[in-house]
Image 1 (cartoon, rainbow, N blue to C red):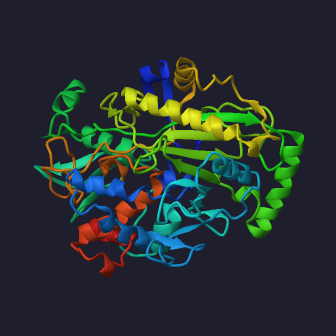
Image 2 (cartoon, rainbow, N blue to C red):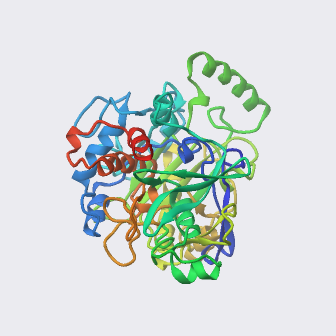
Image 3 (cartoon, helix red, strand yellow):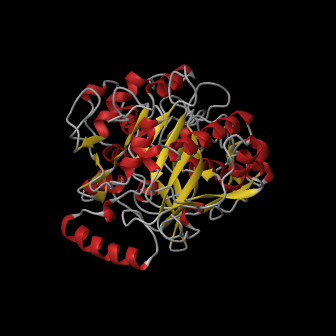
Length: 496
């Protein structure tokens, strides 16, 4: 993530809510997309998140509607099959293979602060502190490529073209019939007999629609793009989780750090991983976390925490001295809404990303409470003998102005952008509940951009669910219990 290797490494527009800083937006530029560079955390969110989607006009996307698709995709190797878990799906899910004992301090501290210990964030309840499950199999990352693409690579109706940059959708009137791409500097046209599926993510999908003349008319005309289909909601409704981190410098070889002892330990662990796929090379760094209520009486958690076995500042681009740990906090359902637009009509230019972080004052108030929760947990007795040194000066939790200044100076995304081609049936919706672009034929959007609201958790698992449900929508099937095909099969059939 700190580099441009396999990473689009986008930057946001200057954010007034973050003191004018530009945020960093890593996105996967590799087979498997962002599932190839993420922290592998498998979290579905809260059931009420999906009931809210349905209430917003996304018929068929309530919790009982989507649960079968979560189960269809899940291949859990650590939990038995049940009403809430499946073991035979293509997305391998497991417990952390070699968790660091240091995480137990965080879990104990959470309990000492009055929070419950939760053995399964995807179980009967989400609230509490506990271990994350991850998209791994045998100590290795299990991304979308391994889950869906690799098993289908030898099928005669599937061809994978890498190094191809999408330039725009091909249209005949109101029908999309393919896509233009650049491969090795040469323009090529790919034609679909049935449907084109747009899966470029919360930044790429609205960008490609706008480059094709589909979007807000004034914004397109400002870039000299002819309006093929005016659709005002394209690029609107951007939502993302803003992350605030408190780090501590503390020497412990279970914690990562650039020291001679740490390098020796890594060398030893590398051999262990090569032989057994165990040890610190199987970590996702954020092995434990929490979903908490910032105040009593809330019907569901509104704060998410990630406990890291490393000090992290500026997405790992700023190297911290020594070993250490960190506690990350985000507001699960931010009220701020941003946009994705165009810097130019050049398809190779990065999209214009403006999350508008903290533009709604509710989010700052919630972030202040999240900061205070983190300070209470780190001050709990469980950390008494490993307090460490803060990575930077932290204001007293009672100093609200100081806390706000700290958040504006340090916070940034935790990589969950959604909503820019949102589902719905109103004038601002881009896609309908069957993921078809309003007013056009032959094209659907199948990625996190269609989510009308950000769910209360990480977005990888919900995106898999969304793609699994898209299979039935594409093939005209309505009974989840009878559905068996993967999204790879559907994509191959629809594009053949």
